[in-house]
Each structure stands twice: as structure tokens, then as C-alpha cells.
Image (cartoon, rainbow, N blue to C red):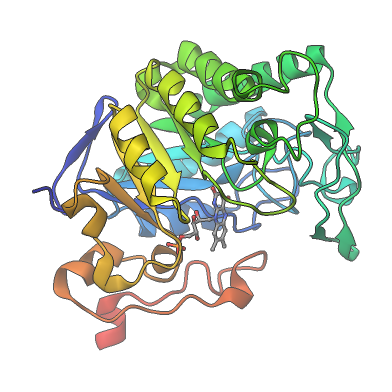
Length: 356
Ligand SMILES: Cc1cc2nc3c(=O)[nH]c(=O)nc-3n(C[C@H](O)[C@H](O)[C@H](O)COP(=O)(O)O)c2cc1C
């Protein structure tokens, strides 16, 4: 039986253990999208996890949704992220960048070019978003043309190249949680009648195109994807065909021999079991709100190869040591999740500090 503290190979790298820091947006980047100087400290504090997946990072101006999220498409971004990767590597960690295109989950107040958001179709998510002028309704996006879909795939590809230039061990495509890739998958957000909409094959095409393009650019062993089957948020409804769509998509992605698949699992256990069988590379499972006594249970049950944790890692830089020693965990402070400074970011106490 595999244990959370055992090493595991992902792509061509060996991870010290099977615990993963889940991607978490912290909205503390500089206004030009470069990570703040504190980001190197924040991530390197958490290098004890087998793998760190960074916060969602936009591959282009269009890809930004929220305020002060980082990008990875300019020289300045590469330079800023290089400080993060070298700090993580110095502390013995490994790091994948999460490439996140927000699609329609975007507000013109938040992007550098202040343009209307882009999406598969001109359907608003029906959700508010925080902007510099407070909470605002997200306006309807503009539907991407076929040419622009090709350009968006190219943006992802270039961003993956730039991530590697910045020292990333790989990239994870954000195909979950209602953002652009997920919008293409869901009929409620994708009303297209061309080859990117309609049938399961067509709705899965964008996810596959992006993944294949990145794998061709940086190698499949450094390419991964995150999916959230069945997650209905911000106007996303996958319809009755949802599980079948994911079985198709996972089968197609499996052919690419990627580094890993990361599932944010919120309910359909039968589908998760199917995905486990269809997928032949490492599988990461993240279960929101997982209680501490169940950490390791998915690996022990053979359902996952790695397990990802978000809030517990956010609040406990020394998460792995605390698990090993059965120590108490700090609680995450939700008021400091997004924006701000070191408070609630780099100042969570370590076990040694807490016990002295
Ligand atoms: C502050 C915060 C920011 C998040 N940002 C992202 C993100 O950028 N990309 C993503 O895929 N998931 C994001 N998530 C979801 C987490 O990766 C994870 O799936 C979720 O927190 C559930 O796991 P947990 O209960 O272990 O925290 C975020 C979660 C939190 C708490």
C-alpha cells in the first residue's frame, strides 16, 4: 500500500512525497502581473510538499479575471517567477505553474487592457466579481472567433514555454472551476455551432487542443491538467452528458502521456472510479474540506497516487512535518485570502515557532 510520505515519479521528476499544494489565487502580484517579492518566500516556505502547484497564472491579458493575479507572458513575468522557482528548488521543492485563462469570469476593470472578457459564447456567468470599484456584476463576454481560439491556444503554448524559461518543473492547465477551458466543456456556457460546440467531441476539443499544444512545446512529461467534473458554479451546467463528456476527455488526454491529471472531486464517486481506470499516469485527487483524519485515505484505497490540499497548506507552511508528528494545524484566515501583504500570507507560524 502506498503511503503519503513515499516518493513518487511525476513525468520525469521524483517528488519527495505524495502531498501536493493545491493551486490558490492570492491576488498579491504587482500591477504588471509580476509576482511580488513575497511570493518567493511564500512558496519556498511550502517546499516540503512533494509538489507545489502555483496560483492560477494568466497566459495573456485576455486571460486575467481577478485583480492583481500574476501572468507568465512577458520578460518581466519570467524574471519575477525565476526568483520563486529558484527559492523553491533551493529548499528542495518542485513547482508546476497553473495556467489559468479566466474566460468570461473576468471584469474589464481588472485587466490591463480593460476589454470585454472573451468566452466560447456571449453568455454572462450571472455572478459578481470584486473590482477596484467594489463588487460588480460580470458583464456578458464576447464570443471568440475561430481565429481567436487558435490564438488563445498559441497564447497557452507560449506561456508554457515562458514558464519553463522561468524555471518551472512543468505546467498544470486550469480546466476546472468555471474558467475558460471548463466554459468550453459546459453546454450552459458553450452555445457554439462550429467544431468547438455541440457534441461532446466538439466541446472537449479546446481542452485537448490546449493540452496537445503545450505537450508539443515543453514535452508531455511537463504537462498536466486539472478538471472538476460535475462542479456547477458560476452558471456552469454540464448537463446530463457530463460524466460521459469526462470519460471521453480523460480517454483522449490519457493518450498524450501527461505528467498527471488533477481532479477536484466534489461528488460523483462512480465517475472518479471510472477516471481512475481510464487514466494511466499519476492521478492527484483534491477533495474540498477533507478532514485531517482522512488525509491519505484516497492513496491508501488506491483511488489516487497523490493528494492535494489547499487551505491546510495555506495556513501550515510545514504541513508535512505537522502530519508526520501528528501536531495541531493552524486555521486559515479567510479575510486574508485575497490581496494585502505578508499578513495571512508568509506569517503563518511554524511548528517550532508555535511551540516555543
Ligand atoms: C484562496 C483560494 C484560492 C484558490 N484559487 C484557485 C486557483 O487559482 N486555481 C484552482 O484551480 N483552484 C483554486 N482554489 C481551489 C483549491 O485549489 C482547492 O481545490 C480548494 O481549496 C479545496 O481544497 P481544500 O479544502 O484542501 O482547500 C482556491 C482555493 C482557495 C481557498
